[in-house]
Length: 273
Length: 273
Image 1: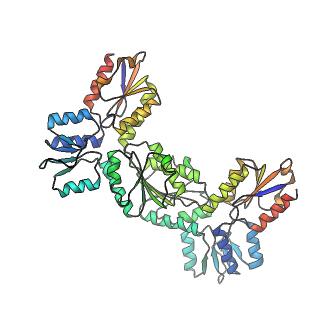
Image 2: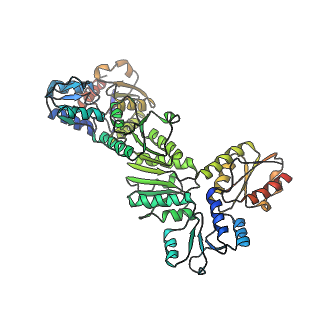
Image 3: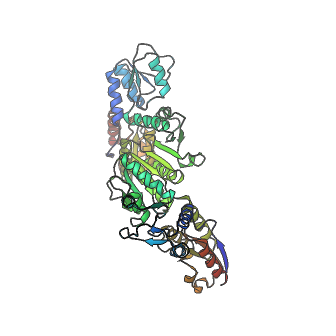
């Protein structure tokens, strides 16, 4: 089986940075998964004794805490600092930026609209910086029932699709006096998406490698599925040989939280078919 | 012939205000046509001795000057004030607003993009308030060759179509870090356009009454032409009976600079067919 890698895939700047921070702080605890990739988290535990806690209540005192790439809500950060934990911030700078925008714009009286997934930790963190709350919308359809103010600030979760973001910006610009649009979509995500789109048009099957709870990985799958048969796997063990029957060329892409060592294993196994 | 008037048509707030200002200042001179309607300008001359000058050079001293609804470039206004003319500002408040936005946003370092017609006096006036110039675009196609800065302010000529403005806002929001969109399209224009669109879908022929050099009147014609046979006329004398052959219902709309007394004459003539 011939295998082609997307021009851009895998780890982004923020993830590489967070992993380096974790490796530099052995025996620390990350608040929630550092990145959305279970295998990489297992490696950090095994090689660097970096633990994971989903719970802010029963943290072992004396251990350093790492804020993950997606950030955490403002009040949680404040509470941990009040409890004199040493907090190391591995929030991606591209996530920190919308947090700051939301804080500043809500102070200036703008209604805050966030294009993102309500349940995503990044979005929960970002909206926590709004003084008077924020509206999270999954798409244009959520705007129709929303009472719009005259002045709106629009931002996006870093991993959403630019085309839908543009439609939301256009919709708002027709309906309110001022809409201040901050494009907080991450270039890395955009580059991975664009490369996945191109590659999936020229192959018979696409394999997307990444965490099943990773937003940007799911976006990649969604894009590839439009062009060819596509599967999302977390590692090479999930590959099923029958997917590749009668296929000649397989494209591979990977989410921003997928380490190279997993992608390499996936490639090798597919090439052996 | 049955005649139906659009739900909204004709004079807007800014035009009514400017005409009242002119009537209140007999013997004054307007700088350029007060509104884009030659018949109304002739009436103001006849009944109130309000003259018109296109030339700032040879103005008769001692006469009051009226700045028309579309405004004038900042440096022209300054020069007249320096020459101690009494200048009465009939600039529409909805045109004054984008002038102020452009002035403030260009001071804050935003690149200024104006969706409008390069040759329109309103646009010439508005862009004159930009500290370092502004880009005037007629549509999306003009953006492709433009070097975009990171921070952009987008405004519109008051009489442009909201749908295209929204597309421009969407395009920019995908490509730059921040785009601050001020919707400076006038509601009156929008209401007239929307009413013309509805009416032209239910009649056999549309008559658009207005100045042939009036931007908003031409927009109305453009909208109506999509739905039925449509003609732009300046007054009832331009009507041609053969247009109405085999037609049952005629819709009428009028640009924002068209006085009611002209529309009434047009209606009466069509009803007589």
